[in-house]
Amino acid sequence: MSSWQDQIPQAARDYLEGRRLDEVECIIADMAGVARGKAMPAFKFDDSAKYYLPTSIFLQTITGGWADFRDGADLEPDMIMRPDFSTATAAPWTADWTLQIIHDAEDADGAPISTAPRNVLKRVLKLYNDKGWQPVVAPEMEFFFVGRNTDPNMPIIPPMGRTGRRAAARQAYSMSAVDEYGKVIDDIYDFAEAMGLEIDGILQEGGAGQVEINLAHGDPLVLADQVFYFKRMIREAALRHDMFATFMAKPIEGEPGSAMHIHHSVLDMATGQNLFSTDAGASTDTFLHFIGGLQRHLPRAVALIAPYVNSYRRYVPDFAAPINLEWGHDNRTTGLRVPISSPSSRRVENRLAGMDCNPYLGIAASLACGYLGLIEQHSPREECRTNAYMDEDELPRTLGDAVSLFEDASALHDILGPEFCKTYAAVKRDEYHEFLQVISPWEREHLLLNV
Image 1: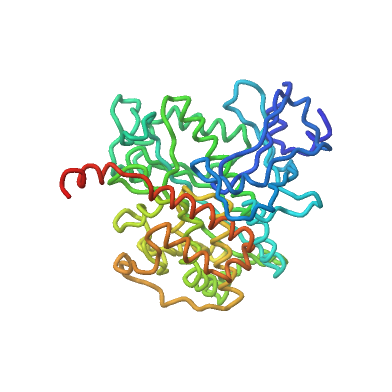
Image 2: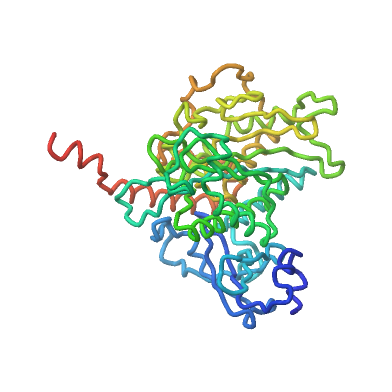
């Protein structure tokens, strides 16, 4: 075993035990959370060598285009890929013995590339740590299994289950509904074990073929890495069973959307005390200020947690989706929910983030808003104890509106980094303008012969 393999996690070592490593994948998450990088034979990988990618990957849109907002003097330089060996994990769906390793993006002087999403999250976490605080998060991942859709003009339908019937909606928490896709879920469990990823639980959600996977709480960077890996792994597991897995926020008309609910708490780094609660269970000022920061700043951060035109189709009432920034204890109609818990587990659940968001940016955005609440000591509105679906006028309802708010969010720019914010807004503007050029089936059906 080479020296760099001594630095990888035990799960990766166990995966390779008695076997020859064939390939190493060097990957970085782009703005969309897509894995980009390069693969090489294992004998070619050298941790002392430098591997490069162009910084322009962070200008790439979801359609494969490139946002252009800089002058011609920019020469599109390379960045250095720095391996984080703590992230090394198996790629168990491959035909050979492969490891994937998340890399950080640095310039020639070793400084972090400010537009790299993983670096953005690291920047936010450093602000917390500098105050003696350690954020803790737990993401929930909702997604759909769907039939193979090789023609984008055709509607998406649920896949066939083991009974030979397509999934029906409104089967939330049904064990039989989960069992319909038992073979693919078994593969997800097996892949997760090989990768050293811990699944806290799997359940059937409310949509047809919609599943939720819960992850154990922990360090935000580690959890963002896990979501990044899980999305790739779940897609591969589904393909083995002649279906797709999709993380679109709203893939099927008339069905619920898919969220990435983010549970947050903040610990004192010196004592490990949960700063959101006293030992007796009373809410602290820190807890209330964190909620106040989410209420004040999340409207300007929605472009990060709802990053596509499709994301805004999820924000509708009566589909267990938030359309407000109210907060309440055990109230799922609020955008900010406080689950029932012990004092040591007191947390706030941000229910606005969609599963289509980049996990690094979604978690960074939510923590940034909470951090601003702590620093600025914002008090939240009075707790909502009724149905909050009646209050829906706080959030942007289109990507264009969300990007406009984000572009003017100077406080968030200071936290996330001005260069990143400028780049991200340019990418989203480009994607939104491209979408507006598309003539939809609705327009052809209702306007072609009637206007």
